[in-house]
Image (tube, rainbow, N blue to C red; front, side):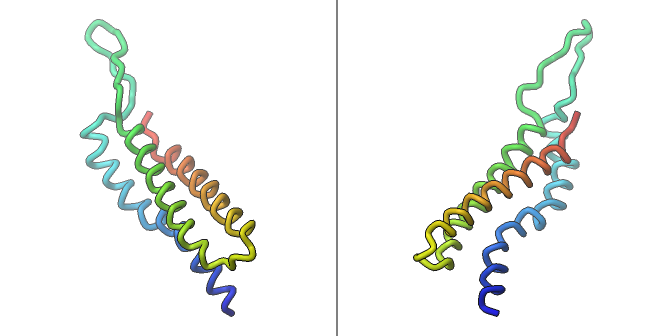
Length: 115
C-alpha cells in the first residue's frame, strides 16, 4: 500500500498541466491574442506580408516550457522519496518526468496554436 501511495505522489507534478489547461486556454483566447496578435500572417496595404516578431504562439510555447521546467524541478525534489540505493531509479524518474512534460508541452502548444 505504501508503494502505491509513493507512486501517486511521484506522479502528482503532471497534474499541474491538467489544472492549468483550461484557465490558460481562456486567458490565451481572450487576452493574450488581443495583446500580442495571433501569429497569423498580416498583409499591409501594398500586399506585403508584415512579420509579427512575438505573438501569442510564442508566448504559449514559453509558458508551457516554463511549466515543464517547474514540473521537472518538483520531480527532482520528489525523487528523494525513492530510496538512495536506487539512484538509477531516481535518475530514470526525473528524466521520464522531463520527457513526459515536454511531450505534454508540445501537444498543448500544437493544440493552442493560432494560424
